[in-house]
Image 1 (cartoon, rainbow, N blue to C red):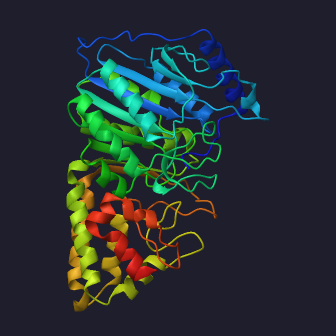
Image 2 (image 1 turned 180 degrees about the vertical axis):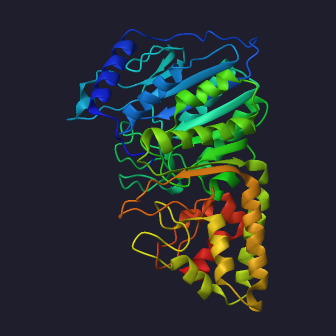
Image 3 (image 1 turned 60 degrees about the vertical axis):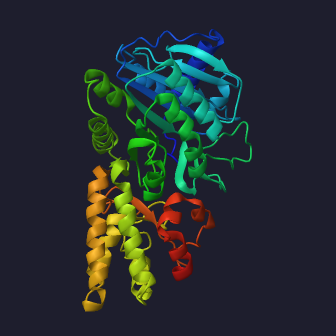
Length: 437
């Protein structure tokens, strides 16, 4: 689940009623940009909010308006809203449909005043085809030297991702056109749309930013390495406010010449600043990855797996993974799904727990895994307010990237893991299934 909804009812009513009035007066429009604009960046926000996060995403669009597009930075968004029966949101009269927006500068947080460039009939925004349509439209109409795609919705990385018992895996979710709430954009589906997108762009896209929960895994990073230069994602759930898009976009507009690496790091810093000071009560993680380094990390994980495959040391590794210090915390840093573990911390704990000459090769390889994580994760930060609630685990051992590790005593192995590129390349899924189930 991407982010718990905690914006106030007052904001919900004001925001959604204001949006309904705006859309009622808008229709199909044309882009005000041309291919001759010397644009440095295009920020594309895919707000698949046709569910219980609609108000939060409405707020995200308003945050972007506080900065607004410029000649060098274009900000565009696709929005899909949902109306809750019997709640404050049911007061809205927006109707169903898709909006594509060119973000204009505006200081009114209760209204969206940007240009509604295009209105589309209601579609399922929890599909890869819908995401592809938006991104290709944005690239074709707002070409730039650099592109960032923000995927904003519910999410769980490759895992089951919803508070609504969704059986699919990925990001997205659309309550209107998929009442079962079971269809999401899986990692393989996301990958399948990318070749056409990078053909349109003429290059890899610069940054993929997940404003959606638990996408900060090596599985997602490995899949996206051929299509994006950098990725920004969280190992843990993303709190309800999501990304602080006002400060992120302000940084980019103030310095549009910043590199992709610098912008990816700026996102992590702004996220940390927001949740450590402005909100304060939320736990959070966020990291930026250099995807050119992910294959090296995958190779080291494969080597580590092979050392266990050729030995009889699985019992100790199982003990390291399954050991708990209390009802919530494990020896190795866990996240919302207990089978998602911090990769650097896992390697560190294997080193500490695998003493003696028989484990020399394993501990050496774990050091190589840690080093590869440190090369790929260019910045990682977390917030963990004290005291941590008794019903919640601490996040202090988060180092930026998670890995799937299920055992028969924690969670049953999810066979959909077999479909992931990382699992196929490294054999990690077969290792887990054969050794720990």
